[in-house]
Length: 175
Image (cartoon, rainbow, N blue to C red):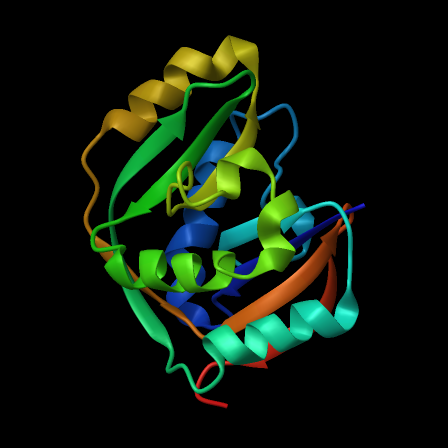
């Protein structure tokens, strides 16, 4: 069982992301993001061991008192992996980097998975995680098209375990 700390959008501003989930989900072996039963999100850390009090305390210390974050997404990108992963890129991720660094200064995250460590992390909102091999080129072509920028308000920080996604703790922004 894996664990993650993510910034989530639990409001109607995330409807455009949900539409992109449907658009790219049709190119997947099975729609991954809509199947999670979890809102659009940006993941800061993924690790394999759990410590409830530590995770909750870290969330409160790093994100406590935080106001909701409005991010503009202005392009779609992909991680050239097998299977292909499609994601929305925020135009100004500086605030996300600051939170990510603050979170990863904690010793608890020395066991964080490689792609989520400060030297490797790319701020992104995943749209599809399992693009079918036969649809790879079509997905890249769709992701390469210019998009109209859209805003999403992220209003909570969550600690979840997965699979399946199980919300362990949520800190609402501004709380």
